[in-house]
Length: 624
Ligand code: C2E
Ligand code: CA
Ligand code: CA
Image 1 (cartoon, rainbow, N blue to C red):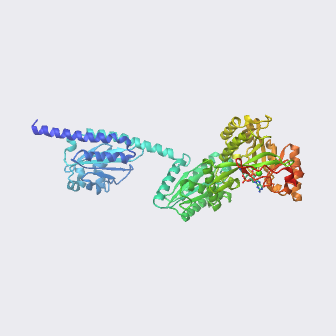
Image 2 (image 1 turned 30 degrees about the vertical axis):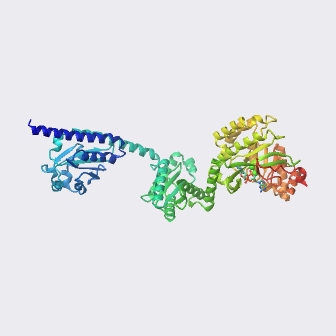
Image 3 (image 1 turned 120 degrees about the vertical axis):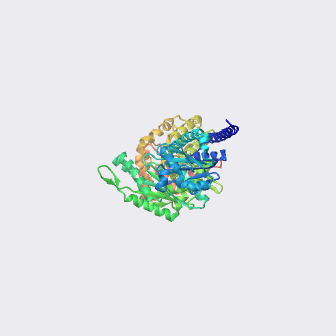
């Protein structure tokens, strides 16, 4: 070995070490590469950084059947060469290119620029950039994922021959493993974001997409629309044709939606029979047009049943637009939901944007939510007096929101609470406070008063809250109650205007309360249609006569109805309470009919417990 050979050997050794070290360092970051591009780029950069002989590294990523390949990323002093490079554009380069051969065989391919005949089409250009040799490394993702290619160019024809393949091939294998992992991660991700029935994005993925769209629109001062779509009377389809057909309709519906949307719009499954569409860039006009097209598209689409038969289905759509309908994702979804509710209410198979009234309801619901969270919902109490002697027998707790401007009465927020499903929280919160007040007051009350609380059926369907209430009641109030064990001071008012649904279920929910001695009152009796059914289905102790009926006591017909109800109630063993008594004449007429108790502005208006309470007029005051 000559001295110069030894020197050359050392140079090669040093070069090899530098390249290996650079590749190892790039390999350390492989696992963090998010996608294929993120994995292969550092490979190119490491090679160019490792040696001044490596003048260019470029990469390409694409579908396996891509006919024409152009580098998607290039680094190195000779990257100008990659800028105009095209592989596979014509027959000659398709069969000759070393890169394409590497892709076809799955093996690394080396080619010298001057002597390799397959390099002929690019020779002049490559030499112009000082490139003497190239090595191409193919990559492939798992399954039918992308294919990739990394091509490296050096300025000495024997560069790769002298260094040997080993470091490159080792790195290629590492990168391949990372690519496979990335592709599998991506696939899992896709599976986690897709709804299995329709193949549309699922709710979580749609929520993410909506948030991204929202951020983007805010940044760019843009617009977008959201459509909330619900299949009308889907339960009838499911019950009538079976779940298989129901699923088929949902699947088909997804297809109709996809077909009717623009390229950039997105559709997702939002719930059972509910879909959400995102319309980037759409203003109110555009969103209405698309919504209308969707509605008509569904209406004219024959949905397949078995045996070649078809059925017709319709959808209702709620629409909201950014920024007109709110500046948060939640506000837009709520507006779309409100619109959908109104579309259903107004007869289905239509598109609606929340009305002003709907918007107000939404604003009120938000106000209530804030008040509940910050403890600004408080019970005001209205005394209930015995008509016979004017003594206060009980109090009804009525919810109030305390605001900076004053006190908001329940009638202003109950509908909003109901519509946005806050009622059960409101009731729970109220009952907890009433239990505390009742416990505190019982030390001094003689005789002890009954506390009436209003309960929505919504609460009765939240078993865990009912359970929680019951344990609070047994812990807090009731141990200190005087009098008979059978009757506890709490009375639950259920209004007949609320649809109770399954009486058996409600009876089951209420059973522990009743067993404990809590009594039931039927509220607003005479204001609805199902009054008598309620009386027979649940064991009420009190019947509260609705104020509209009560105020007709001065008319002959009203008096006749009230007398009938009073007699019936007495026969059935209910105690009657007249609501909304506003004057003396009314109180007298009710007393003459034998109504037991009464409440109303005539006796006292609802007040907070810590403020001085109206004690109720005595009998003389009420009757004279
Ligand atoms: P309700 O249970 O029938 O309550 C009686 C309503 O009549 C109360 O209105 C009360 O302030 C009002 N009122 C009292 N005396 C008179 C009177 O002499 N004349 C007239 N015209 N009205 C009188 P408020 O407090 O606005 O409550 C409205 C409704 O909201 C209640 O009707 C009840 O159904 C519901 N509500 C109130 N608090 C709650 C609650 O905590 N939970 C639930 N679920 N509903 C509640
Ligand atoms: Ca009530
Ligand atoms: Ca009532």
